[in-house]
Length: 500
Image 1 (spheres, rainbow, N blue to C red):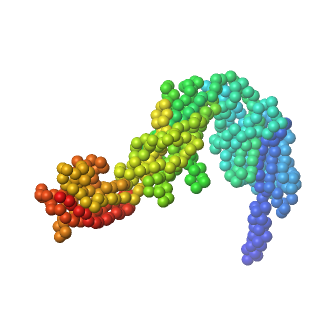
Image 2 (cartoon, one colour; image 1 turned 180 degrees about the vertical axis):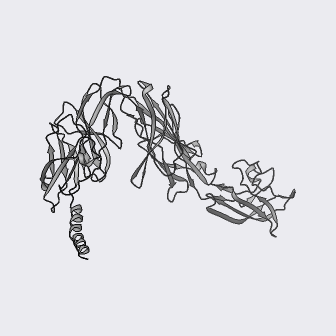
Image 3 (cartoon, rainbow, N blue to C red; image 1 turned 45 degrees about the vertical axis):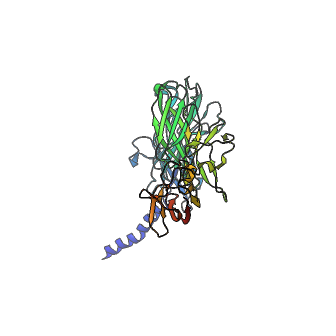
């Protein structure tokens, strides 16, 4: 019983101390190499008001074994950092951890050792960089930033060249230039950073002349997809060309949605043709640009070009006028646009240009071609024409009827039959019926008359019933049909005189 009591008492006293010691364990923040000359390894940790001092441990070989860590310093925890002056460049990979002499150590962290190699991948103006992974960053490693500066500007800060998840990177840089490089490890919450050592390397002379890249056509096809054509100048060292990439941006709710449409290998004709089917030409603008990827030179970009986006509507209180508006393409030249109405070029009194992208069209000359007037913009180029999406503006039907007709060879040809005079007609559910005074149906047509074709008997009553002439007198008609793709309905009825 006495022995059990002592055991319980030991547990009550010692266990809370051990637990509390684990909670108060010092935490290592980063192991970084100071980028200010001369470079030195700097250890930093988090402050803790409940801890007075911290011990620093170092390991250079077989660092997965805890016994290989040797205590190298003891400092106040409020110091927050310590520089290891016993280690000088060139640095090997070294692991550090912190703790108390009578408790466990923190997870070890290591410095990053950066190395470089010129003339990689057959490109004399490239430098290959590699470094060991940064292990056990306090706030979880997110990525590495590759930083650089020209060697003759040591007092200036480093500039970011790229970000990568890998621990290697190939930099394509200017000809015959000496650079300083350093790697920066960045935590997930962008609050902790650690630097590698600085390395200096130089590029050799290479042909890195820029390549002219041009988008020569962005055209909407059948209102379903967009075709994009690209041309380039001759690519230097085409064997090292990676691909020509086409990118598309779409601004939706003020958010830019970027995606790579496609990529094509080098073409000796320097011509590339893409079909973008993952679009809706009625949504608005799509922004395209092309990039030449090359192993031995920086990327070459084209200008950003858009599709032509057309919108339109009726002019208020105007029966025969529509207003259409279209967007610019982004080409640098002063372009002239054609307005197509019902697939026919509209005879504007002056060309539509990028400075005048809105136009009021008088459609009275098209009023006999149907209730829906179709508009499209065409941009004529030397290579191929560009087209916008089409816009269909519905028009309410206008119908006139004569009050009499004279089915005789002595009458004018337009007065020999009875028919509705239709403006903005539609064949949708079209029905034209003629009755005598007793309500007997004498004539029926499900097709409207052909405009100005008076000898074409479609939709025209010649005053006969079953081949016999009907007598002079008063007759009745009814006309009904739908328009605007069935959304609108029109119907009317009345009477007229047959004259003999």
